[in-house]
Length: 143
Image 1 (tube, rainbow, N blue to C red):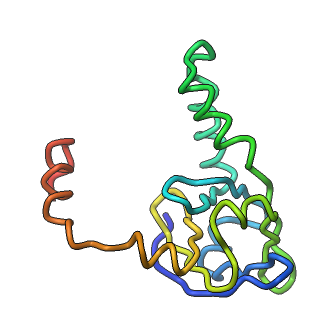
Image 2: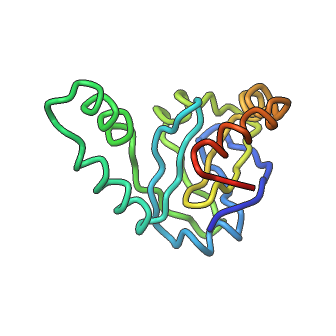
């Protein structure tokens, strides 16, 4: 399980250090793809296989399902950790997530999210957590 928040920088070539705690769980090769809310999602190979099977089970005849599958698979890439603990984030993914310099990596249970610091700060307001918690209780998640 992934958890925690780490601040790093991405260099001009698109190389990003993956925190050692995350690298231990991810292994040497894993998948990075477009994520929701303007961030990138990172999956270890086991979790990616589970997610990929769910995507493949969606009906081809449903336009939203096709678009959803395309969103995640077209931008997906295998990332390999170099000797310095870095991965190369392809330009198309850097542009999608607005990754220029300051980056935040957060563990979110089965995946890691990679955010631009600016976008994360704009999105990560927790002022409405009481309302969200109430809604989660309605979905069956009691605290």
